[in-house]
Length: 271
Ligand SMILES: [Zn+2]
Image (tube, rainbow, N blue to C red; front, side, top):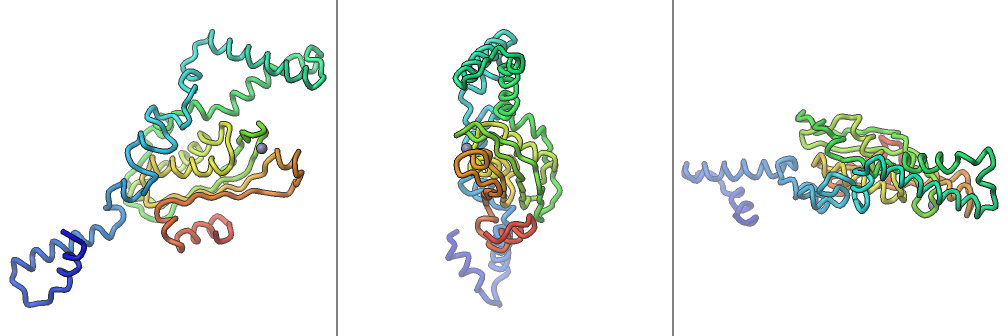
C-alpha cells in the first residue's frame, strides 16, 4: 500500500461497512507500529551505519576492529613468532637510541628497548580485541527506551602521526530499542578502539558506530575531550588546550532536542 492510500484511508469518516472498518483498523494498527522507531527494521533505524555485521564500517566479519590487516597474525603468533617480533622491535628501538646520540649499552638504557617494545604492544592491544567475545552476550531485553549515558570514561590512546599519547574523557550515550548493554561493556568498547594508533576524530566515530552495530539502538552519541601530547610537548606547545570531538547517529543526529539533552547531561555546550 502506498503512503498516499494509507493517508487517504485515515480520513474515511463513519458510517462505513464493518468489513471496511476492520480493514481501516488494521491499517491504523500498522501505522501505529510504524510510528514506534523500535518496530522499524534494524537496517532502517540505524541508517547507513547498520546492516549485517560484515558491512559494519568498524567491525570486520571476524569480530576484530577494522583495519584488520596484520591483526590476525599478531593474535595467532606462537611463542617463537612473538619472541621474533619482540627482537625486531628491540633492534628498532636500539637504532632510535643510537640515532639520538645515546649509548644504548649504558646502564639506564640497557633494558629500554625491551621495556619500550612491551609497552607499545600493551598500548596497542586493542587491535587484538574481538568485539563478539568481549560483549559475551551482555545484551539484555529490558523494554527500556530512555537515554543511557556512561560518562567520564578515561581514555589513553596513541596519536598515529607522532606515536605520542593523547588522554582524556569519553562520554557515551544511547537510546535503546528495548535492548540494553551491560554498562561495563561501553568502556570496554572505548578501550578496544583507543588502544591502537588513532586520531581523536576516528576513535570517537568508531566507538559510536561499534555501539550502533552491536546494540542496534535508536541512536548513539559519543563525545570525547582530550589533550594531545604532540600539541602540548611540541609544535604549538599549548598546554591548556583540549580537543573536543563528537559523533551522533540515529535519533541523536535527527533530533536536535535529544542531542542537546545528551550534550547538557555530559556537560558539553550545545553542538
Ligand atoms: Zn600527534
